Amino acid sequence: MARPKTDEIFRQRLERHHDELRWLYMELYDNDSMFAELCTNMYRFFKDRKSSLKTRDKNREKNPGWFRKNDMLGMMLYIDNFAGNLQGVKEKLSYLEDCNVNYIHLMPFLDSPKEHSDGGYAVADFRKVRPDLGTMEDLAELADVCHEKDLNVCMDFVMNHTSEEHDWAVRAKAGDGEYMSRYFFYDNNEIPMQYEKTVPQVFPTTAPGNFTYLPEIGHYVMTTFYPYQWDLNYKNPRVFNEMMYNFLFFANQGMDIIRIDAVPYIWKELGTSCRNLSRVHTIVRMMRMIGEIVCPSVLLLGEVVMEPEKVVPYFGTIEKPECHMLYNVTTMATTWHTVATRDVRLLKQQMDIVNGLPGEYTFLNYLRCHDDIGWGLDYPFLTQWEMLEVPHKRFLNDYFMGKMPGSVSRGELYNDDPVTQDARFCGTTASMCGVESAEAENDKDKCKAAVELDIMLHAYMLSQSGIPMLYSGDEIGQLNDYSYKEDPDKAPDSRYVHRGKFRWDLAKKRTGKQSVQGQIFNSLNRLEQIRRHEHVFDADAKVYTYDVHNDAILCITRQMADERFFGIYNFADQPQTAWMQEDDSYIDLLTGKAVALRDISVPGHGFYWLKRK
Ligand code: GLC
Image 1 (cartoon, rainbow, N blue to C red):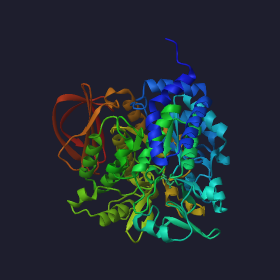
Image 2: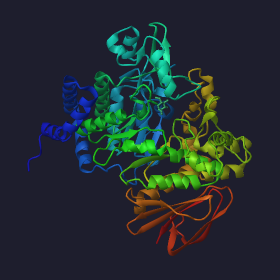
Image 3: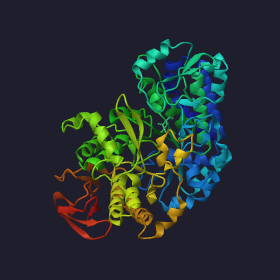
Image 4: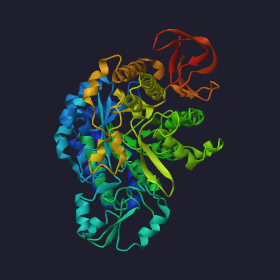
């Protein structure tokens, strides 16, 4: 059979989605000519897509579950912290390969005003790379080199807002109505006040309120995040179309994964919380179809930092999918709750919820990322043990600040809100596990214990269902970096405490057996190799928790065909027994030794990875 001609491929893909796409577009915008413009531009981006990317599209279309593999391992990194600029990243790819990483998330790199950047999440120009990091050509070239090495590249697509210095915002500020209509402008505070009644605050202390007054034109503009991040108005089809062209532009630079930043916020309605409204799903569904028509090799990763009931709808349905992947955020926060309480009951229940979801749903698992940890836990569940929301959050923050007896963690609070008494937490994995305090006290035993906890948490993360994502620096146990306080642009935002420069001087020590870096790096490497080669870590494995009748121990089972695995993790700092009686013989995947699963003693903060023989 003759291969379909290129245009024919586009036509077939468009035909597959056209009716639904048009239906949703008309429902939102009722605008034929803007829809026609969208289709014309989709075709233009398709035509412009280089042949290597079209080959990627073709291969991945044949194997849509390509990313659900047990060798998928991500790492998120800041280009400047890690390697200075994009060229630098290219030169450091072999280090990433040593880390077994095949998916890199390049943190925001688009042009953004230095003093008002929110870590790059305030984009001034969607078609320009921040000059100190390189150019768009450097990005495309890096993507090419990554693809040759089987590395996938992910970037942030900040679609909820632009910087106040974006061309549209500048024109809006000059009073151009056409551009004002791309944002939410009000000439008095009546409607803003109405919104404030129902819309919660994202940054209550660093950026209170959801509107900013612009004295130069006597208007209020909606700014859900920082005052310099203006919310885009997706009721305007021009905004939707242009942002879709930006998305396709990045796909054509070779991006494999598009992280849709702050996606629950993109649609606003008066009288609502302006979060997770049904139109958000219409937009994400349209984006998924547009991607499948022009660049089907590209994945959508949704950033929904909310409780599981709110997160899961962003997968869409099996027939009408939305995001390919979502962050497993509640599990992450619950993990740290478990570290502080040494009580796995909530974590077990949280994992049971996630494990009970359809296998097609792919979560990104992580211990730390560039953001703070918000204590979004299942408080109704905790209330049965009298752990109430406000005092429990205070306990967790005190614990991780190192203020509680027995706590070795170090870090800082973020958005400590005196009204709601809500504060979030910032710190690196190693500092939260106690490496920082142990080194400060020069206490070898404490350091050993901290490193063990750090490794145990990674082992646990690597055995969850989904794709693991490392935070750059964690692989060598990098500590908090307090130097951000000397930079006036960063000082007010404590998230920079865990956004320090990558310590290449310390990374060199990773080959040593005794160094903190070597112990963590080599243990992670071993675990990642096992994960990559053992069939039982396959993405289609059934994953359950297993009751070992000890609230300090979490036990995860993975079952793939007739292979069976137990991951046993002790969250207490003292030895504990996993009360279990299994007849089959097992082997310890780390030592190769035979183990009988009969009431196993697990060292404090220790773990076992066991597989049935
Ligand atoms: C996302 C980012 C966060 C940023 C916010 C606003 O939540 O992860 O770092 O501040 O969006 O763009």
